[in-house]
Length: 313
Image 1 (spheres, one colour):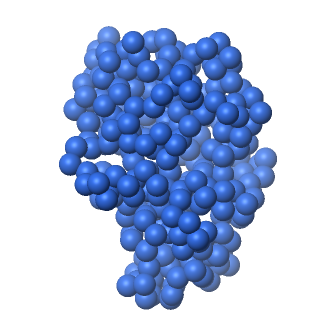
Image 2 (cartoon, rainbow, N blue to C red; image 1 turned 180 degrees about the horizontal axis):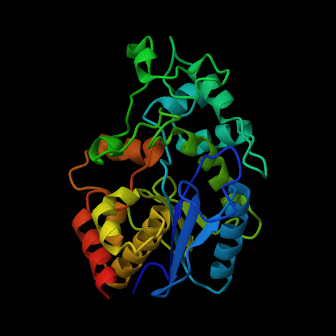
């Protein structure tokens, strides 16, 4: 029996303006597979629209007694020590709340993420750990380039345990330029909190692994599970399954959602929630409390095989 009936994959964006009316890359895309049937991928112009449409969709699935896995492509936590430095507690959940109190994100995508990043930088000596911003933007507390960081020995780790094991994963401290994820985290975590606390969903969701531990979740208790994903784990398979002229972001969410769904139907999804083999007890503790883990990391062969099977089907 599969863990979930519905599998969702979301490609997030930190754009400061609405995305173009015509579906485009580097915007928010999401795809869902319901009971093995792929639904048409969705394109969202703003984070506000994305949260509203995802909330409505997920609530409908839960009301129909379908269990839901929703994967988002940005880190769910910061390196160990960051939460305690900012909030006084070594808890990713507390840090989510801290960010939600500070991030302002309008209906049209205007947001204050660089102001919040600058506030966070002031909690450590020197200049950093956040780096990367448009050169003309007036946030002197954020260096434009990584090489301009100062007092780096006093900064938190550059990467999480998962980032050190995921090929090509970017540091959470890079907040601008190609491939950066720092800004997505800043606007993404408060968005996830809004989704989970929406009255249509509240009380029915859990965040893996913070609420569940590094184990398969009990979907009888929490039929909605949010998980961090990394679409680049299936970079080759996305390339092979991409349709002619298809926007890469669309292909990524479509192929990843189908792979998780197929793996689940084959009974192979549960082991992914245990994390990678060989994690030490100390690493597992940090992952469960502060850093999070990427669903599928350490189990690449299984999910890649599922992606290829779906592409060939």
